[in-house]
Length: 270
Image (cartoon, rainbow, N blue to C red; front, side):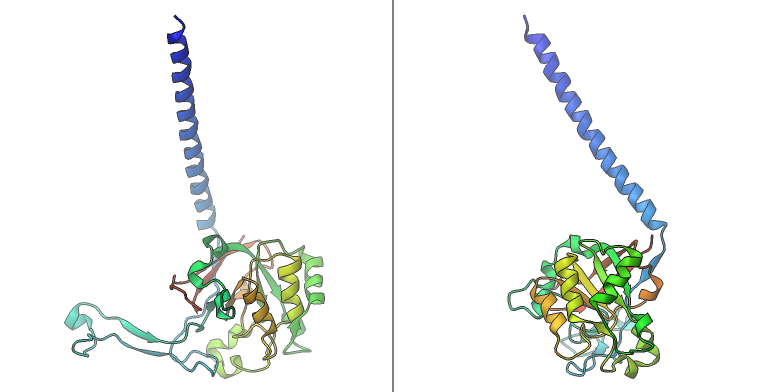
């Protein structure tokens, strides 16, 4: 007559397991709610430029063209008065405005923008400041020595971080676009990019200029893309973000086999 006690034990065990699962799910929900409340109460900084047909762009791509979307049967543009809606037809290269460069931009078999993992789209944000060097060297390439000096003051760059280079070039985007397109310009030294990925294990990098390198050799951009990393170019407002402690969120359309596209990046401050 031991059947009933055993059944009782099994039933109680099942109930305990069920209650433990419910409690775990409740804790997870509570954790997410707490995280949301914390994040929602923080200051957010947009790291993205608005862009339009006159936006500065590499001369090899040419300017974008925006036009009203039209009915393909009639050629007539849609209007709110006539159709209840209107839309825009965009004709532009993917590397336009603040944009993402996926590995496939430079690597034949590299990941396209739809293949970049979601977990790489929200990262710790580190901002390196190149501006102290620009008074004496307006086209300064941020060096490994500069990086080590930064680390002595702010601590080691954490593994998996997104590292952005502040140069304040973004301030010319709207007010002096010709100056923004100047060459040469302040950017990365190749050795620094290599050091960040190989010695610090960062996930991605970004900068304010339209190119990664201070020269036209594209050594840094070639290296990081061909080693499976992505970058964000033409960033803005990095002077409004602390050197450490912030998070970056970067999003872009999930274009099938996409080789680059305008991106939206923003920082959540500590």
